[in-house]
Length: 209
Image (cartoon, rainbow, N blue to C red):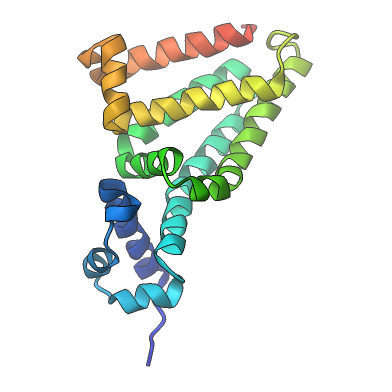
């Protein structure tokens, strides 16, 4: 008789899935390898997921859930736009260093398998889009930044910068790109990255101190 997995075992299965998909991409990933590492059979994976694609999609959702939750909380914690930006930048760089596989999986979605990208774009980005747009709009209403900004476009630019930072710490192409601009030492100098990124964003928004 089939025995239902514990939440801990399901989380293990998803974490091993994230690792496999991040290392080998969707096409190269093996459900047999994932099942073996999780201590289950491939058949058990198919008890929970219709096919490889649906399992992959759940791994993506699982991997990005924590980041979205953390960034949403950080953005809402401070009444000061400048403090919110500082906290967001610090959190993002820390997360990028500590969650390499999750960020590489995110890159896999963005750069490949277009049908999945379309399916996930709204689901993944909707919360951050709303949070960042509301943050800029609130700051404009309270006179904390420039009045001529377009909140939705500024939020879009804001999120694009954050996404590129994630990829630059974990994806080979983007790592080389960052080194080309800033030198190899940039990866040992988080303070420089934070300071300049905060300066760039606050300057673009015309943040009032």
